[in-house]
Length: 260
Image (cartoon, rainbow, N blue to C red; front, side, top):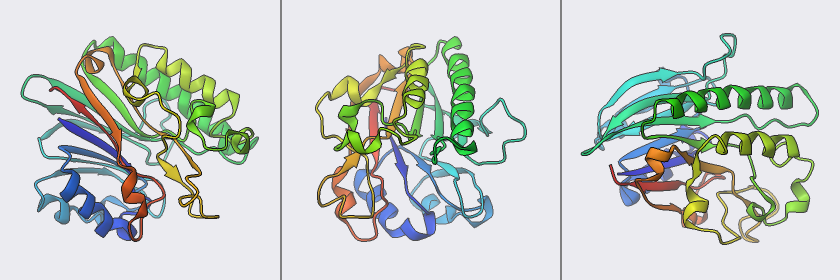
């Protein structure tokens, strides 16, 4: 089963580019971030015509996550547990059933956290504490599960073309990296690095200053797999080439192939 993650940076602005990629890449499941749309305004019919079941957790003008899945989705839940007052739409999860086994899918859009130090960074770290708690719960089930999306974390210097430019940024601050490592070290496999250790592998290029043309990118979109899901991993790749197409997102898709 091919499962992709894609921060599309606005469903309305990116609808043509997204559909073109879906038709070419043909993922069984697509986890979307930053849809920037309320649930009622999401153009679900376009994806349903392509055979996808659609579940969204939207927010007007900001954030928002969605799952597009050709197999049916079960037990859909919206919102990261741990803070009943958090109104930001950054988490949706569901179960998909493959030919051999079921998989718990968690789609996330982790807060950016800039500027540092400010309340936005405090919110990022608190959100990651909640993520760690949910991650621990998933592992306790001892079943295939993954958490994928835009983590807004540069895990190590090799994941940035110019690491020195990000040293004081919320994406690469020691506290951010430490929180990410603590989650991974619970027992998750970071799927891309399990398959590819080469430097220069990025999922985001800023729109400004010719970042794409200079390959001045960072790798901030990740798949974390539970041990049971990691055992099923066949491949993980980044669809870099679509960043060069008209009206692109500043992110590109990353996907895993699991033997489900």
